[in-house]
Amino acid sequence: MTDDCQDESFSSAEENRRFMMGFTTWPFGPDIEDLSETYDFIMPYADIYGEQIDQYIPWKAMMSGDNIPKALLDNLKYRYGQARINMDLSLSVSLLNLDRSDLLADIDGSVPFYRSLADDHIVDAYERYLSIVIEAFKPKYVVTAMEVNELYMHDQEKWGEYKIMASALRKRLKVNIPAHFSLSPLHFKIYIIVLNQKLSLT
Image 1 (cartoon, one colour):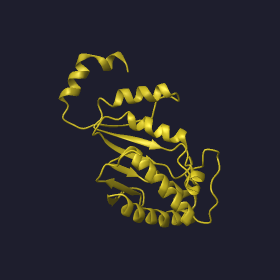
Image 2 (tube, helix red, strand yellow):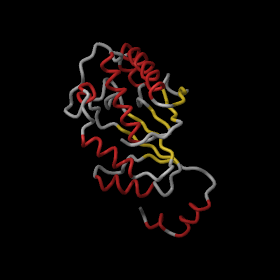
Image 3 (cartoon, rainbow, N blue to C red):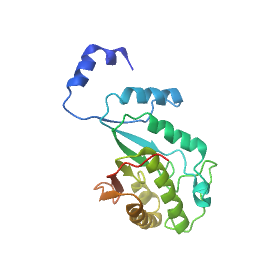
Image 4 (cartoon, rainbow, N blue to C red):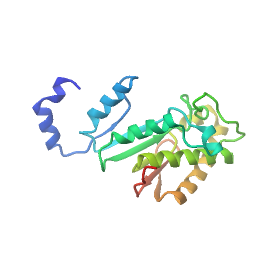
């Protein structure tokens, strides 16, 4: 944070502001210290903040019934631990890779075999992963797959498969997690879950 952001006029403006502010935790640098400094800056001023989970999806662990890898769990716990109590969170999870043309890979770079994105083993594994991440963060809002509209531009057949997958996920999560569902009006049918109930960290 710069000296300009620490002066009395800045603090006074913060105390007297009559509007709400939101920030993402996307850090300004690659190191853990950069992420920590990002949290330190936004948490005193944010009314809502956004987390983005897009490192990898532990497909093998989710399909075999194993626990989520410790490194990923530790990362989730660290992020969750930075938030203020009772602060609203919008959580975005990435289903797709960086160019949004296929599934996001596992930690070893592998992508599970599938004939369709709506294959049962893909939907089952991703549902389990989403449930773990949601429980870890206790969000108010969840984007179950980011920027999926770009999949339409890469592969319209996969886009059709994704819509079937998204519908199946929505039905399952609606049963398993107390939630109210609504559709985003932007970029086709991107499903957004609005959680009504806080979930406990396991």
